[in-house]
Image (cartoon, rainbow, N blue to C red; front, side, top):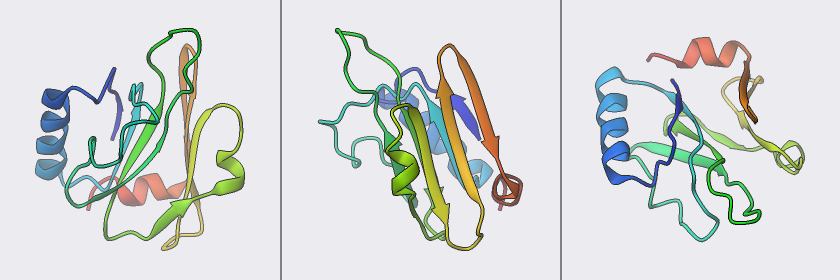
Length: 126
């Protein structure tokens, strides 16, 4: 599932997302425009049963917005792909150990470009 959240900090949006995810049994949720900040812990936007991966936009001149976030169902073992995440853009790379493929979630202002391998097709519905 791919969503432009326009701030997942809103508790009502987070609750609605959690209900939808539990109802549809979605394995991978990719959010753009998470609007999270480094000072926020992962527990604030968490969804029970999901591991969270995020890359917040660095604050620049009082601009708000940006940021990407992935929720991955806990049955998958995944970790940040460190070298790729060090790039100076709003991209978030994870490696899922059950499959040698990557999932890339890339935000390029003002357009969204999502590139996914077969992992996306295999994981969208369980």
